[in-house]
Amino acid sequence: MSHPISSLLTMKSFFYSRRRKTPSHAQFVSSMLIIVHLQN
Image (cartoon, rainbow, N blue to C red; front, side, top):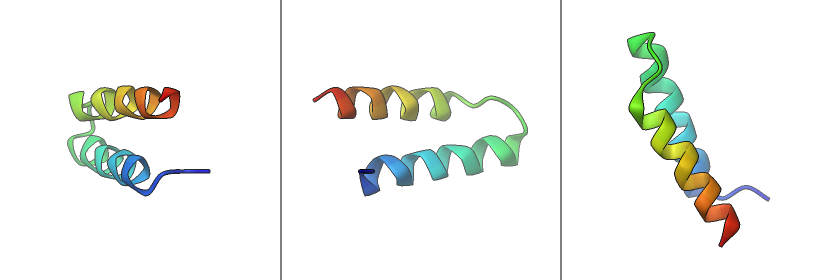
């Protein structure tokens, strides 16, 4: 059961990281947000 907000953040961060071709900070933040969101 995936949340639309977290999946949107993941797609957004994935798009940004692909665009920059570097491991972006947004990807780390979004993954942390997803982990916290799943724990709650």
